[in-house]
Every structure is written in structure tokens, then in C-alpha cells.
Image 1 (cartoon, one colour):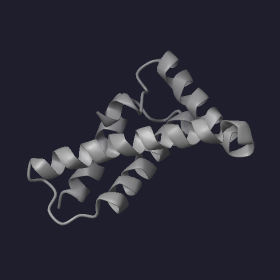
Image 2 (cartoon, rainbow, N blue to C red):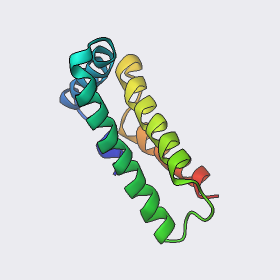
Image 3 (cartoon, rainbow, N blue to C red):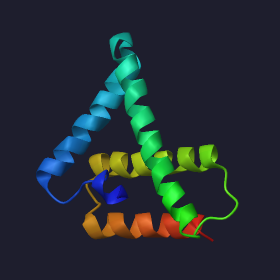
Length: 108
């Protein structure tokens, strides 16, 4: 599920990431985009919560704080997207490995 957000398989996907990063930066500087930015963050936060709920329901997460864990996961995902835009070093396998490592650390 996370790999669907951190898209690096094609040039088109990389362009989509680039546009998202530019919009995010632009939205912080222009008041007319604040509501859209807030809505987008809420959608992302709900996505992260769904992932965490699935992990919890399947017995992979025990004692965790939903708010903190969801915020941490959103920062991780956005960091991967940002890095994929600025460095162009990430391919599909690198992204998958990073995601798996992050999730495994959460589940310990």
C-alpha cells in the first residue's frame, strides 16, 4: 500500500511525485491553498491509520500510540517521496526495502 504513494517505477510516476512536492511547498506559502493542504494531510493521515490498524488487528503491533505512530509513518512516507524527487536514486526495489525495514522496526 505504501509503495502506491512512493511511486518510482516510471518517469510519469516520478513527475507525479515532483508535482506533489512542489504543490506541498507552494501550499505553505499561499493562503488560498491552505484548506486543500489540510484536506490532503487528513487523507494521508487516515491512510496511515488504516495501515496501522491492519498491522494491529493482525497481531503485529501491540502497545502503540495511534497518533504518534501515524505521524511518524506520514513523515517517513513523505520523506521517501521527497528523496525520490530530489535524488533520483530510489528505484522500486530500494523503496520496497526501505518500507519493509521501517515496518519491521515498528513491529518489534
